[in-house]
Image (cartoon, rainbow over all chains, first blue to last red; front, top):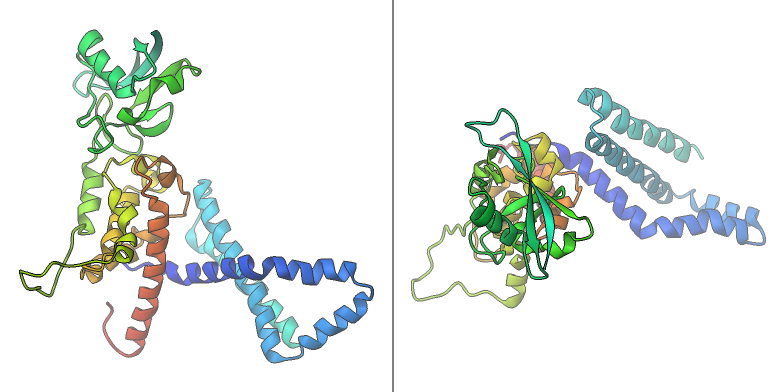
Length: 114
Length: 249
């Protein structure tokens, strides 16, 4: 029996799902609702921006964006299989996992150039 | 006592080119199971109809059929629940070859179950006068998974098994997990290659229909996904082994 390499994508999928489940609602509140509700949204933006100056905060922000991206890619990839939409593995895998990687790289570039 | 229409999908390999449907009218009382109805047909109307059954109490796991498109044990399915629908459609379990009429050939499923060595494997030999004791907590870890009666309803429900019969499938993977979680067992290293394979836990996309149809509430979908965690850890440990120059486990 050949060992499957699915654990790599499944780990990223699982980590993204866990992150979303635990801190997703809090993130939505802090980044969307608070900005809309607080008296001075610019001050809130400034606070969040200054928080992102620390490299560890940037890494955390990257994880919060990249892992859910892999989570989504993995679910869509297998969802297509369940819907009997088939194609070459390299093409579909490349599109979804490659897409998640490319978007994560773009996000990393942007975060570390702030 | 009223009556209900029962439509059985017939297939007699020596006569029929393809399956066909036969309609029967059977009595329908509050306490009549589908198995009672099939036995009524067999005894009173048409002795040529073949169906498999034994215990009549959801223990033997032999009377699984598709009832109005759902995998069910005929002994645990009651005609009263189909009065409104007016008709009960019965055919052999999906995703499996049909031996005859309502009898599915589950030998492929049995082979998959045997492959994962669903028994206690011991490498160390304990003294004969000592029992392998277990705390209630240790037993609770695997107890639900040990309720499987090998009825193969989960295989009829599993779209992945339907598309790829090489997939070990819900019951086999659940039983592998059942023994791997047993504190008395020492054989997980012999079962992990099956879980780690493409045809092992990784073919499951967590559709979850297996757990819905299980007549014993075994929850194979949960067992398989816990198997994924075990296989994931195994993958990481093996990666470290390879990095340290050791052989592939």
